[in-house]
Structure formats: C-alpha cells, structure tokens
Amino acid sequence: MREIVVGTDCSGASRAALVFAGKLGRDTGAHLTVVSVNRAVARGGRAARTQAELARRQAAEVLDPLHVHWRIEARAGDPAAELDRVADDHAADLIVVAGRGRTMAQRLLLEAVSSRLAHHAAHPVLVVR
Image (tube, rainbow, N blue to C red; front, top):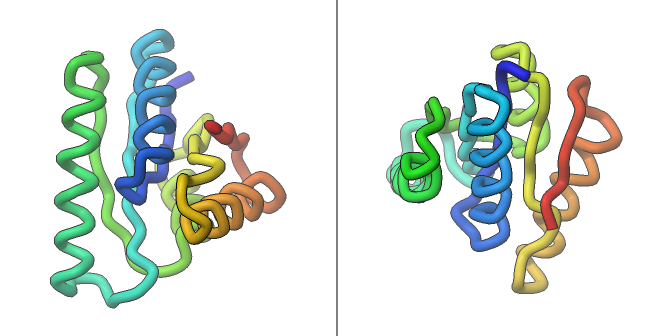
C-alpha cells in the first residue's frame, strides 16, 4: 500500500478515521493525503480557510506522533465526489472515511458520504465506525 486518502470534517468521528488511517499508514509505509471538503462556500472563502486550518491542526495532532508522511488538501464541493477525485489524483490504494457522527446531523451527513463512496468510488473504501 502506497497511498491512503482520508476524509475529515474535524468531528470526533473523522478523528477516529484519521487515527485508523494513520496507524495503517505507519504499519504499511503508505503516505496519507488528508482531505477537508467544505461544501458550503467557494474555495478561498474565510470559512473554507478556517475549516482547512482546523483539519490541518487535527491531522498534525493525530498523525505527527505516528511518524507517518502526510499532506493536506482543502477542497470545496461535494465531499464524496471530491474524496474520489483526490483518490484518482494520487492513485490511492484506499479511501478512509468516518461512518457516523455523534449528532443526528453528523450521522446523516457522514453516512451519506460514506455510503456514496462505498457504492460509487473507483477505489476501495474503508468506513470507520
């Protein structure tokens, strides 16, 4: 395994996906691409920059202690489509996403993204619960 794409929305559920992907990357020597997708605003907006910075901080907090190689990509648009695009761009071996959040809104959003990826992505998808 050489490349893992992991999606994050900075929630506790996506933190668990980061931990799992980080350990898998450490154990296999894979490089991680952490993807933060803001569906509400155009690329470059203040909210998108804030979300991307929070995602970078969360990724550093989780992944740096594991000594894995990682980078972050901030995208705007539909999370499932953007994660699939990033996986294509980097010839990913695996996409890792969270399966459900703690709040009802998070559960609906995360399950919708993970379900769409599991059914339509061109790459294997691992859903962390």
